[in-house]
Image 1 (cartoon, one colour):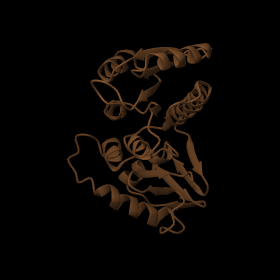
Image 2: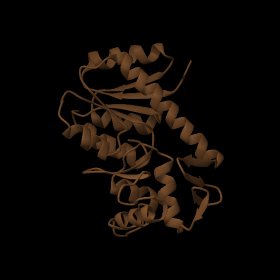
Image 3: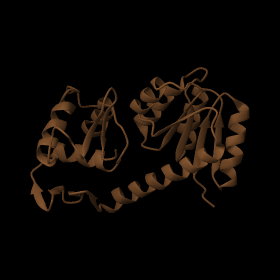
Image 4: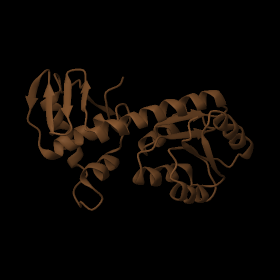
Length: 231
């Protein structure tokens, strides 16, 4: 049995109860909330391993709840919406969500996505804890020694450039806004210019990308931010 804690925040009680049953059948502990404020309180009280959030919530919108959770944690977040357009999806991913599902959805598919995100999340946590070498294509990062190699050749990176690259690389495929990157790499108390993200990304690409104009490592997601690897 799994035992991981899943927070579900949705004001449609029938959907929430149905999803709860499916997740509990897989061994997960499920915490339910029916408005955004309650969801935020339960997040802080229960410290779940993953959150499933509806976008349209009373008292505190799901997008704002997502943003506040992401400011404190890197747990996987799956957003739900009854809208079929791409605006909610782009907004959600820009705020740090890991996945997005449109209602109506299959509870079995949601469970499958929960399992996949938790596997990835705990694997990355283990990598960080063990200070293992991170490898992707020709890029290799020694997170313990703060060394970077491309095709076996050492690449000179500043401390901040290495921190930025390793932050993105340990969350392969996840899209981060410039604000999220700044908060995680530079820190909330560093009163710098957020445009420094663009500058550092450009410098990193010049150092690690075979063709900086068509990056294969640090990719731009237009209108949202940046991600490492993936399609």
